[in-house]
Length: 511
Picture (tube, rainbow, N blue to C red):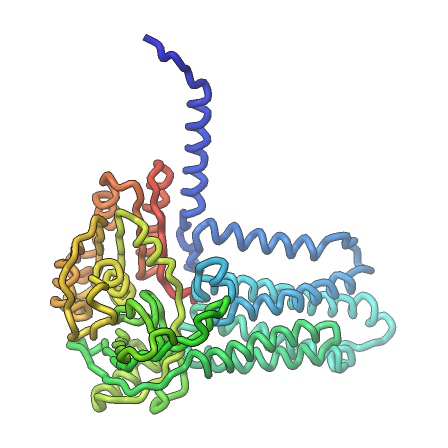
């Protein structure tokens, strides 16, 4: 028997769908680190955007540019123009209160990779500008008796060299290897060298001044208006050292204040006093120890609602905030040592920062999966609370150690957590009563044996058993070391290639 209607384009349509799956899979795929340099590469979709931007700038470098010695000065001048033209973009992408969040849904830490790539492009343009000008001296001015010393000590060239050195040192001290070893020095140099570079660049040449003024305005507004005023708050806090002697909890609480300007067209930045969202983070400063500011994910669950001026007359509501901090060196080690002798301290919080991207992925997926390693549980717990807690009874987050426990409610959604720990002592980071509460609400929790005892688990095999169900859409959020993130992302890319609808979110600081 033959069908009455024969679809001749069925095979063609299937081929187009298959091509789209392959393309989506390729965009999601994250290559292995570069050998020898051990430099972590982003997923292909990010690399494609970065390469496109680089190609566009190279095009402007060489557009209608004769490749001959007499035009060396012109080429060097164009490189300088491209440097200053990209300068406002560099500072725009470095701002913590990121306007692009309104259009992309991504917070500044996710966009930080573009800030770094633009910075590298600018350093390269500055190098070409400097080398080109020296080449112009060698081919033109040297022949008429203009010495190199005289050339370099002229006001125009000297100021330009100063700006060049400032931005090149700024780049070198921003490298991951330096940041991890000397984070406090990185923070101090990042502010000083930026200001020095902008001032020297302003004095270097008049054509750079509009771009410098715009960049300086972005820098100062972000630092002074948003970070120091609108998004900062001071609180008394309690310090608790956990049994592994390497981890501590910083806990504080306060009455939530009404958020301002509810009728504003754009959301007004606010501090943690008005609440926060799951996966948000804050910058912590402890004035008694130093004025350094370090980022930490908020471990405690986010308030499910916040007050607005329209709710005046209601009882003030309360919020609990906890930070889970692993001591390594520098600031965190000093804080841990301080916690052994002092149980209370005054802290300053700058934030919150973050986006609802991860929660949006999970809440819209019938099959919600969170994969986290170690202290990444600080990302997972607020997400799980937001997905599973009966918010009709609970308006605010409970403390990590104690708090009201609302009754359970059923969900059609499957919510699973894979938490990989290195030591059994780390189970204290996610206490049993918190685990049981979430499991009573429907969480499927799997904690493999500690990696120090049984080695690394087969994450792909676990995910295959979770993704292989009948659910049409799967949302996956991963937080942890680079290797874990890449493994989960590439597993999802493989499943997308096979035609599965999987949405992936990565919660990791972009620096």
